Length: 246
Ligand SMILES: NC(=O)c1ccc[n+]([C@@H]2O[C@H](COP(=O)([O-])OP(=O)(O)OC[C@H]3O[C@@H](n4cnc5c(N)ncnc54)[C@H](OP(=O)(O)O)[C@@H]3O)[C@@H](O)[C@H]2O)c1
Image (cartoon, rainbow, N blue to C red; front, side, top):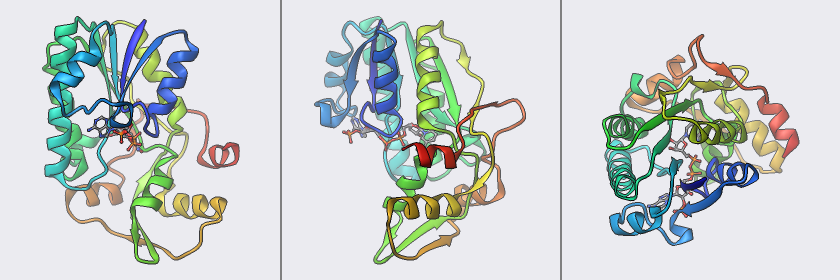
């Protein structure tokens, strides 16, 4: 099957490309570094010609609700519009477990994306996953303030991006099913511990400090509102196993 992967070079996107190729699919990689800007409707429409399924794992690194909403609104509209015109039979989007419990900051964009996909013209599936094990490195890099690394206080049950990628490709190979079963990691962790373990494994020095993020999003991160419910599927690889295996 020809599968277009939006965000093909990202933390999970690179795994989605690997899994799709390993399972014999023809991959069209969409990202700016591959020459396709998702915010450019005509570039997206051209790239989707001949695609049977789309897996959207694109993202913007921001905590601003306005920036996140603007990105996901336009990129999703372009993928759905281009997809409908090209006859795409299945749009698969990746979202975040319980993002709708804190629809502010980055999560505001995810909630908007989910709504556009579920009300859109292309048969759809949405997989919600918890934070990736790879999130520890993303937070380390993005939380730099001078010599410090600031880490949001967060209860999280991280999952290997590779396991999320397997599930996304399986979904793309099947009929559209709407909301799929949530996917989470095997156990609850504290984000600060994960970032410290990641930095130590990488030989990175410098103080790493916990900070409460403001607003609804920060409160949800602290309270455990973003942890999976009892109905979620739990993956197998723990953070420590993932760290050792890299
Ligand atoms: N990170 C997590 O812990 C986590 C957990 C659960 C769900 N998710 C969801 O998973 C998805 C992917 O997250 P991620 O952390 O893997 O993202 P990421 O590593 O930040 O990668 C983002 C991807 O999007 C592409 N991209 C960004 N702006 C673009 C644009 N204007 N046009 C084309 N491509 C663009 C980037 O490529 P270029 O820069 O080359 O354009 C890159 O391939 C997101 O929807 C996120 O909400 C993430």
